[in-house]
Length: 81
Image: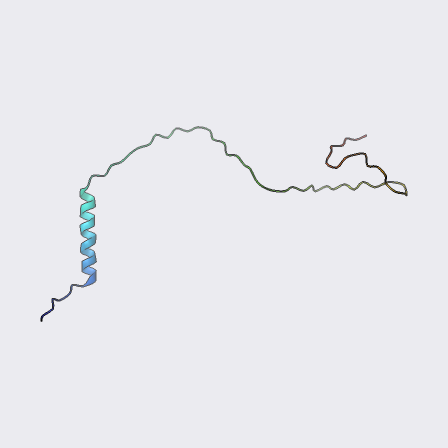
């Protein structure tokens, strides 16, 4: 029994690449175009986070004794005077 000599793998791969390239170059290529129209775009910026003030205010009485009532409610805007 005689065996056929095997071709080197590199030549076989080169032949496959050459055949694929020839077929792809022979086939017509279909190209589509898109018209770009500029227009303003807005991007919503919603973030999940917590905020903290840098200026914390402690309310303390100027006289000795117990503080029985706070006039401003926490989180309420206050004005001078």
